Length: 576
Figure 1: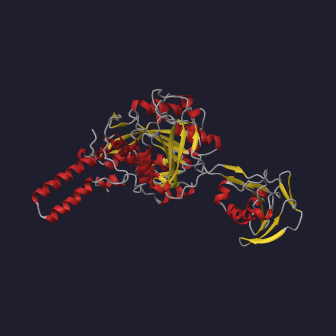
Figure 2 (figure 1 turned 45 degrees about the vertical axis):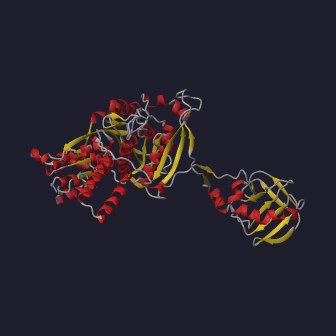
Figure 3 (figure 1 turned 180 degrees about the vertical axis):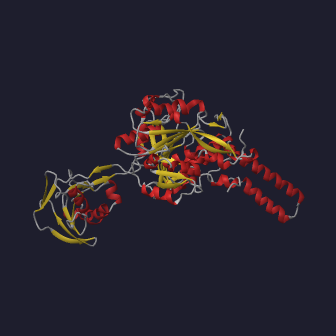
């Protein structure tokens, strides 16, 4: 049973203060103690919860997590591609190691954590039900540890997307504001997940149909989303205006203006052309929030009584189309209040159109209807999964917010493996080279029978490589067994090198040597040296002058095994 850390600490401190008060009765001491008590007991604004300790967190005090590869479960359908990873084990242990291999490395983190509905959240080997007084505190303790590591492994220009429903949306929003910074909140996507006429429980007064995706960037204004685009066309540039008289000239708002009254000008609509004009109503946000509206209000509106309806105003010195002026009209009918403006193709767009590269971007909206996709979700991946399975179209949309096609993606609540499936499908669609690392525990055999099974089911549909890891442990007190932690950890360095570089240490293209004998043996095999592209070795294994010559002749890349993998653990054990 997890301890309620904050409550226990507070109770101990208050008890100690009572003891001090009983021993000291001078006014100065009592006043100070009262102030401390007020700080301990007062309510504070913001996200405050009773901190809880997980069993898996306590395990880290006595054990060092390691990864163990299971080659019999590897999937290899791309002979030249990089490797993706499925990691089985508690995600806190997995993240402990991923923080070593992928610090500031992931472009996108996409997670679908338990919604804490009273039947989906397992904490310390037991479901947290709705009657648990600390259900929200346990969930927040659980999430905060993982999100803080997630921030560490996210690139400065990366983003995280978190699926959630209304049970913990408010808490999660405040937690993310605290972890990532309120200023780094990009959007809250509102996702319709079921039809409004599909009742979950006909006895309920309220019918939820929405879920949410919280989007945060790592650093303010570093992430630039790939916004929806369309080619900037000239199909609306259809108008020509003829001035039939010299008009009447006047000045307004610091501009030279010519007014052409009704009958002194004419307009015609023709085939779209880059040299023609586009019309736009001066209404709505154009009227209230733009310079066009301000110009209309200051120049055109005050002249309606003087010039009459259906007048044309040629205002000099404005516009980005190179004409040197802009046309406005006042209303055509009595009691009407709005007119129009006529603009040419902006000079910047004209250049783009002439080179065939003119594109217009639009903001990303925050509502999407995926009720149909959620309704058919049982077919995706060929695996049954009734607790939070997400349609890959939704996940592909989120992944597509990143402009690059070679990003690294992390999901440490892998569940049914939808994120991995979405990455592969998006790569196939746009020719990208995105890579994924996904993690899940094996509660009820979910990792083996659902997550991994799904990836096996789709292996003939995509070219990709996958390594299957499980988390294991090394005792932090091996000295009592006359063993060295460094020797034990060295046996699991291979997995970390492969994970960090998304490769397969095949002893051909990528070779690992851990001691002098292995190095000597390598250089005695000419055929291996000729195939080798990269050689990984510890810093304490030195190359001779002749070996360096051979390395240079064969253009072999030398990489020292990162000492940061287990530097803290070895220092703690006194072995460095």
